[in-house]
Length: 493
Ligand SMILES: Cc1ncc(COP(=O)(O)O)c(C=O)c1O
Image (tube, rainbow, N blue to C red; front, side):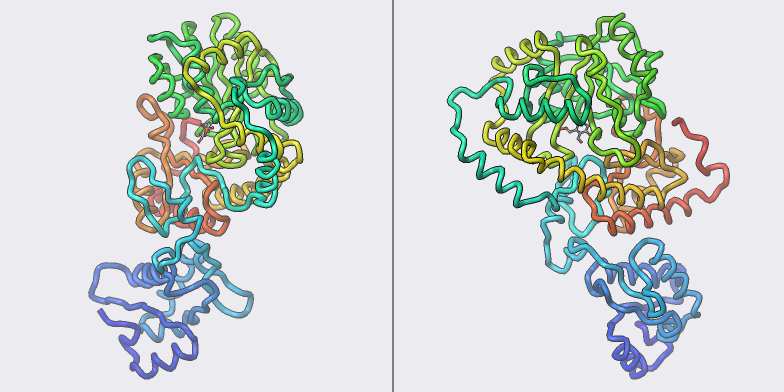
């Protein structure tokens, strides 16, 4: 292998690079089996990822670099085009090719660790922590631009309130009040504070419900594919999990069995396929619940984040006797806060509260009071409005890159890209090699996978990383899906 002076004198290379003010660690190996375009592209990418080429650096013109490397200009042009498509490079009109603005965490190899890197690389399922990767896995919100002044103000005000020696099992009255008002306003939920129990999040709410209502062997329906934490929690309380298939609109109601004790569903934005349960289906679901005596457990997941039309009102409002509503601040603020809510008719709520006492379970009082203050002051609403704009932009970037394959409503923090089964492992592995983490639909199934593809989350990656990561995925997809019969259109949803 020879460095960029393969066919040029070292002196000329020195002069050219000095003029360009960049030191390019690029070499070509003509004898190797890797195409020259790939060699050039891979090395530039590695230099940008590794921090040797930083945001704003100007790259040589394709002609100069081609001369330096002793390759044809087409080789460099194609390599640049690829890097443009992936979002690594940007052109400034009339003035050349530059390394695109890079979020600090991609320079982690250079020794600089940002807060974002620490957050993004929380190990998942036993993986080693990794640095310098674009994390497009779902389930993580953006926690870097909340209004920290408002957050501190809320904590100071909460600190002025007295501590309780007997925490309320239903939750802090201040928060129950504030939350009921919020739910009436934002979700058309006809609830007063007496219908609300404050939890530590949706998972905690599911567990309290399961502990209150389930007997070993009871059958619990869970959307398929669906939220696996829900399956784990119900199974952990002895339930038999019954997978209930979904289509593009959400759970397929007409196929539901008649012997379920409860069914867990995400009607606002199905996780992970992204459909919104239409009104007629909501009505059929409630008719089914009344006829069979099953309880509908409504996870109001992602209802805060719709980017086109207003969200449909919560199912709970249509039938508080047969529906329990669960919500959380995990996506709208952070899972770190550990606050959620369970809304149910008062007799059921009383049973849950009694069971909660037996389990010695509660939510932190000071946290609840701080959240109540944020709600009362409108800080949470402001944060949501800001985040909606940010997430909408990121979602657009995903759809722009992966458009033909994407499914689901204009909502939430993730997009499903439905793909032929056999290409999925190759895309995931290829993306990972290029520094991008994506999730697949497989682990969201209880039984054999019936929906195949990628679940692309844009909660925890900045817009330019979303663009770049999706650009990389798209390139891999185009490559993997060259045969025409594999083009979109033949999927399940
Ligand atoms: C479908 C769904 N519901 C709820 C949650 C949040 O649960 P919790 O409030 O327990 O953090 C998640 C988190 O990823 C989710 O994917």
